[in-house]
Length: 319
Image (cartoon, rainbow, N blue to C red; front, side, top):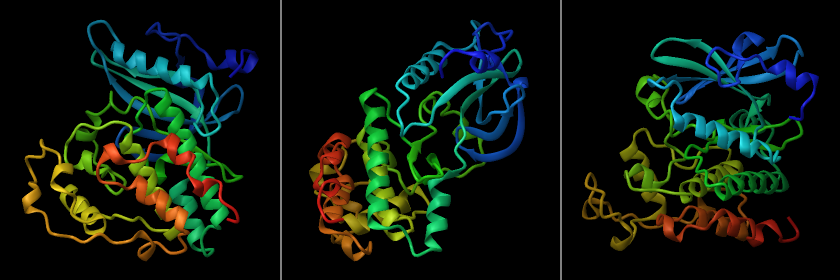
């Protein structure tokens, strides 16, 4: 956001000395959502009347104040914001709320987008679904946003329809990225059930992971845009993995992670691979090929976001 009267009105220097605005600058209108990493409110700036989304997170304080890793991640978010990427939700400000000796309530102020993709899918499921052109455009925008994050060394780790916002004219903006790693401790404190349905096999198995985990999630979401229902609906981590293998088939032994002590390759059922076109209706050959390359068990063999964007699915005619 460029400097000017509105920008200046957002800033009210706080007692913590970070140059952050104060939450008292906003009126809380309603709770929008509650997730593993914090609560999101719809709010309005008292001076400008601007409608925003306020994400509240609890930051544990050290003897030196706000932890450096938190400040670094906020710096990364602000740096990303300078690009004003069309498929990334814009961070407008960082505000502080109540502070005690041990913790600080921090609010990330984002641009407000009225609906998420989960709601959008639900709405279109009542209207016979999306057109093939809509699916292609949304899939391309999701991949473009994720590729931007990856090019800036950010792994989202929790891509799902609830974390993808949809503007009134149908464009996608990725939300809830960054700071997630810092606030992992909240997952032990919250009563909110974290969705497993878009989680990559290597995460379920507790293996090391990198950018391919996001590609897996996008593949799940893309399949859902066609079928209007999640592809893998597990009720626990083991059930989720079982659901995945029942479709992908039992992987070769050399692809099973060596550090997976909880589940051995020998104990797996001998599932046969199923074709995605038999599970997801209206898939073109190129769409099935792309989803297959995204939903590959071995993360080293999974297609990258950059290569996915070059796939023939996004260039073929007619659609």
